[in-house]
Image (cartoon, rainbow over all chains, first blue to last red; front, side, top):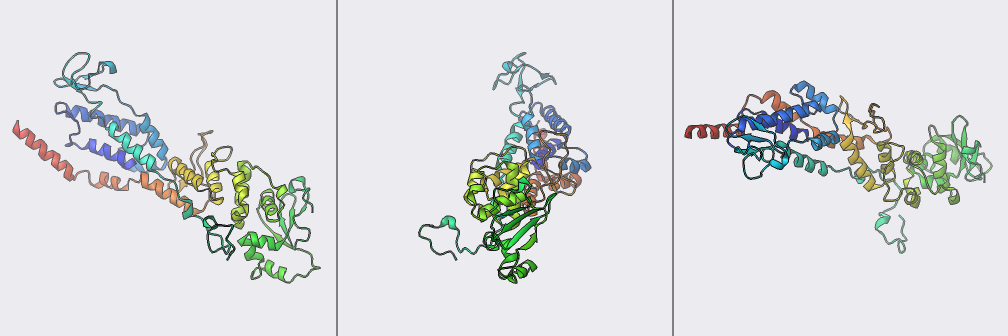
Length: 166
Length: 250
């Protein structure tokens, strides 16, 4: 689970990787989401750039806590990066025009990176799948059979007709 | 029979069998004595059978075999047992069903589970367990999760055991040695975590810890961070080549 998160950070830290879905503003988009991942997970002591601290962090983490942090992680619905300037549009959700590739407020061409590039979009379902896949222990693996002399488990017998006990 | 005089009334001896050949002595502030039938104990418990049975090599077994009809009952001291919980089990063993509580709260269940586990008497409880822990039991109350886990383990409540062990896996933390720690108390988050209930078999905690470790284990990635940072991976190289080609076409 943590590995999944660290892997995502590592992917974004990679200086040559291009993760943005749009060609025009790849560095800005990737840096934005790298910053989000680093700040959020460092703040919640799930991740640290300092390797020696990671071990200590892991000792204080529960799976539930990691899940809660991820559940609470949100980005803006609109991260519109215009193609020719570095302005990040902070329009409200209502001005987002899905598929139009332009800002709903100023009309400049730009893609909404929140809905296509955000690592949170993939990370949350990945963690959710892991979380729901966690299974408890099977009681039968740990039970000590008491030596009561029975040759068969009475649960599976027709006990009315069953006269043997040993 | 002195059943009306229970241990809680301060009476020092409770006769589950007035002709009983054994007196179980439980040292407390006021010592409690239970006069019981050794044959009933041996039928109900493999531990008592090992101690008192016909082939028992323990001194208690020898003393019982050397005893004649006029001899007084032999005393067996049981350290650290909760007398009220043991009394419930002894009532079942001695067929005194009218004296068995119809309901038990979780702390009482926990005490019964400890005694039951110690003397391997789970099978004796039979239908009483269905009465005390209905299959749809929801966990809660005053005792903490790992005690519930112990109850579910001891009484063979398989679904409850699976559910509780999962809860522990996802809410526990580990200490510096990698040992699983109980989750912080929800009622008092400032309360520090502690080790698990010592009655829970280490194999269960080990299995919970292993699953916890599997989910949070990051050694492989740490190694990559430490030693592989300057070594481009194949995917990175592919991106680099693609970018280079893209730049070349401009």
